[in-house]
Length: 259
Image (cartoon, rainbow, N blue to C red; front, side):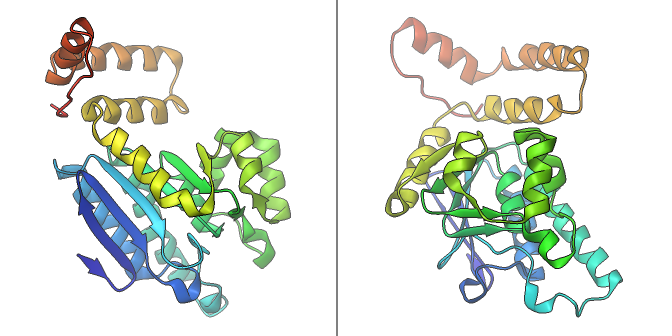
């Protein structure tokens, strides 16, 4: 299953989405954005999908917005384009399954923000990230102004946005933005290893953990405590919880089904 600008494959509970405009370093196109949005929405309701991996074909993860078409677009076109991008970011946030970004080469502009919208980032040691918006007189789109300050704080976020200079993956790993830093030649293997491990985990619990953590940035302590209380009450009745407890008592690895 694939579209010209997006390759889609599913194997052993893992959905792989590959940005496929290598000649333009996987710069976004309307087709690519729509394809991603639909893929995440379908993954949410597909019981066979437990984990989603997002990567880029060719030399880079994504250069973000297509600079070749910048300066030619009307304000209305830009407004509509960013509206479609917003729908994609929200679809990722609303997908109650782990999303892993596998980043190599460059992740620039909205391409960096697309990685930030994922739940985990695995990056090649020689990869670079850049918030290049200010170089062309723009502000961030794709949620960067939301995600980055929450990860590194407002001062560093402003510095990265102001300078628009490439940031080595090693720096972002030290800051906790990147979860795993691996040799370039091992990126696919290590990402698959992580995705496979998560695919055998308690899927419903992962979905609820994602919702609680994401909501915590805009909620009060009282709201999160109550959400934890309600959610835990629901989780106690799941088959995965019963299996986890039984496996612990029997001193074996649990076999979760996501039920």
